[in-house]
Image: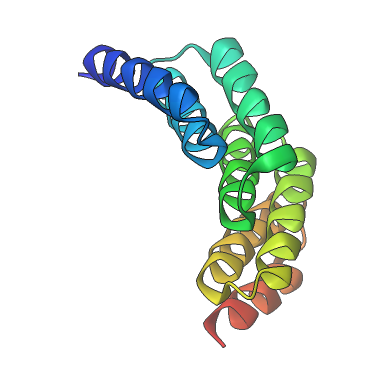
Length: 134
């Protein structure tokens, strides 16, 4: 099913590119990266997610940028790289805070708490979850 989904995202990406919709283009590439990761193609997934992140930082909305940062953080979390997970979720939280996006910020704080646990910082993780609940 992920192959079919990738095919549909490829077609959608072409449409977004023709429309010059950078936000849609960014989200499409990000979702393709997520699907590639699900399929087990981590190098291609990271490449797609980094492409989406670069494009998003140049021309997408704040929420799309934050979503890209969190998607990259998710991959690093699954790979066991708590430092990179933390870095990406911290940036995502900052973008969400600047964009006045409390849901995005709460989502980022939950991801950040997972990174804190991975770094052996359980009290910081608890503080981050508590902050997300506010």
